Image (cartoon, rainbow, N blue to C red):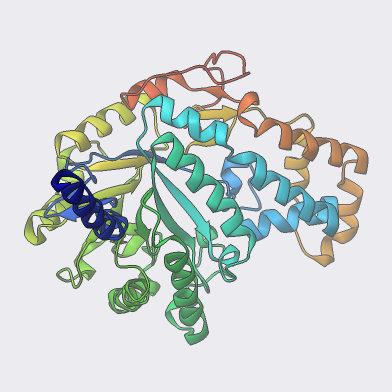
Length: 422
């Protein structure tokens, strides 16, 4: 009888404690910052090894070997001119469905990556029922299953934070002038933070990709950057207390002199570096910032270089305990990425057409230079086939330079390294 009483008492105590277990582990499931480190839920310091899912939601002309159209809107205008409105819209929907699939995520995990940076276009996240959340939810689920962490990167902000192709703007960083663009920026980040606040596979939020170019005329916006970032952090924290928030400096994520001391908990800082000597002096100012403020730093983009450079810089970053995400995962006909996909049949005719002068004043010449409609449609249909992982081949030298393995690409021919270097 006494044993039964004790057993019943234990059960009642356990039943009272179970609801607490459902709450307490949630906070313990997230990657957090501790001094200069990222700390995994198991308490271990996390060395980030990642790549970027560039050219997916944010296509870039150079990754398609285009010399004319470069920004998403320019590339979309080209496809609409060639395919027509309905077929172009259908093309882009299928492109986004095919470019990143579960097979891609599984492959990246097999390579040895533990994290991915996901460039986002704000237009997909203005509405919480929009296409962006459908696409991103899938990647989140696949990454959780594969054991990969995600950093959400707002590559294209409302109004544009650079005025160049990478933010899909109209040619000027109107974000820093436009009240409505800034308000929409807050809406987008509130939507993202509210939607993913309880998702532990998301490591954090990279608030604004590469703001304010090095152009002298735009230096006047340097002083406006951190106040805007403070507003976004407040908006995120109002709905999501869990995730790390990444801040950056001006001039393409390189100038940390515009930043003050950390102003909130669970902050980290990201910088980008390309095409410089892979030596410590190239990153010393970021190491100094980390040591001065006792915060983690992370290089969210680097790469686009020869394998030897990739290997040297990666080793330097690891020696200095700096996590990395090399750019990008996948490109057309190139060895400076994880996997490459072939140029579609008929692509040279598309490239030739894309190099023509644009505008309605050139309509007669452009119409005369068009490939036939059947050729156009066949080429874009082939592009959709080529971007799938089974049509890709790995770049062994690039993966080995990152210190990773080279698993076979499912369903593809072995890589032979015969593509161009960029």
